[in-house]
Length: 376
Image 1 (tube, rainbow, N blue to C red):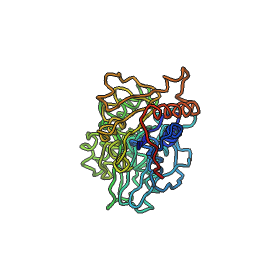
Image 2 (cartoon, rainbow, N blue to C red):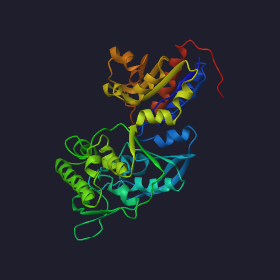
Image 3 (cartoon, rainbow, N blue to C red):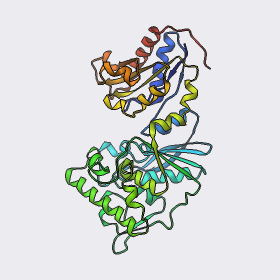
Image 4 (cartoon, one colour):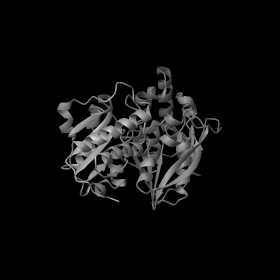
């Protein structure tokens, strides 16, 4: 029996690498060896997943969501560099977790991109999940050399709070990205503005009150107008494009730089060489913190199950609300949940989560007809 352990993270508890490790320990206790492939879908943990499959980590220092310097890292492998919002200026970087809807910026992401460009990549992968800001990508662009000025010509500091004051944008001194393929990996399809835009849909999740959502929406509309006024005629079209509203508008900013948007799940399965790991595999064990009805609609685990077919797939989750009658339709032979094994809340208890994953791994191994193999 050749088993591939390929989970995503259990958000707030364990990284994908740690989830894979605990499941593999349980399988080993049941006499089954396994290969591990920690996964990501463009959210937090994307850089770590790339490193786990052979990319080289490079430490960097950037501005966190509210400007506090923080250590992060990017991943580089030959001509490809992976940079993520979450570990640079995402929600995880907010001091004490306090939301800062108007003051959080994407500056750190732009700084991370600048570090990545020093490695001369021909492909730059931007993992956009987990953002803390709604600044239309103003901070990211500012870090890359764009300047924003008010009607009196005064340069503005990047952030949601200054969006309504932008009058002109100058990109004449921006970094040159000719020859670099920029890929935005994520699953957000919202446009930049409007009732399904970045501020209206995701602003409240980032701490914005109703009045702050309106303020940010007005500011982002003004940002688009300023780009058009400043010689970027495609800005309105790009703002309406699917995915422009990802990461508080960083999708829009990336498209201004020439990026193309792709499914984060599909792209990372390719980037992490899932199909090669799947070859000669008899069973795939995957998992993430929560499985629900949204899992079926383009989320990582369902896409993995579809690509793995006809190899059977077993999933493990902290919590599952997907009805058992739809497990097979979603591609899962069975779904194990941590809640079946404890009444305690595992969401913020890494030790308990790890112990239960090991137990579940052992149970999967014991209920699977297996012949131990050595994979090296």
